[in-house]
Image (cartoon, one colour):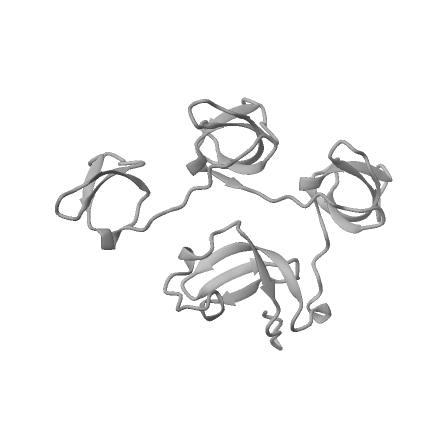
Length: 233
């Protein structure tokens, strides 16, 4: 199996001594041949205000938050979106963080789906005002006895999915990689279903491993090349 590690030493025989991130009771280091290793590029240029997903030191799970401080030891202080009774902030290594791009340029009269504050569920509505504090006032299509409009954070809003019959071959979108498989990557481009970017269309050269080109959460430019009768893209 493959596990994350850091190179500690370059050996004379061409192997590398790697220190495992989590030895889990086994040896802390091992000598590994170059052919059994793959370099991982870790993004480290976070700035205060970046939206991220980060691993909590409390339970090891990943939660959304905002970078609130850059620490002198190279870690980042993350302020959780919803601490849920726990600490409001936590320190995280870059290796345990992933930058999230949040769309923030909603306009008045935009039709959206947004989280209703009373029950936390998504409902359709229309943007009626930019509140200027990072929230937008959304007028609900059917308030069902609740408030007619509510302030909603940008993280709790999205455009309704594009119907498949509204898509055309050749259209360009900015999408987000949702999963990576051996034959390609599935990308959320805002449609009713994710689209497949096949390995044959990822690069001009032969792609043996899609993970060398894309990662989950990465934003990519995509074009609609085919719309199948079964609705697959």
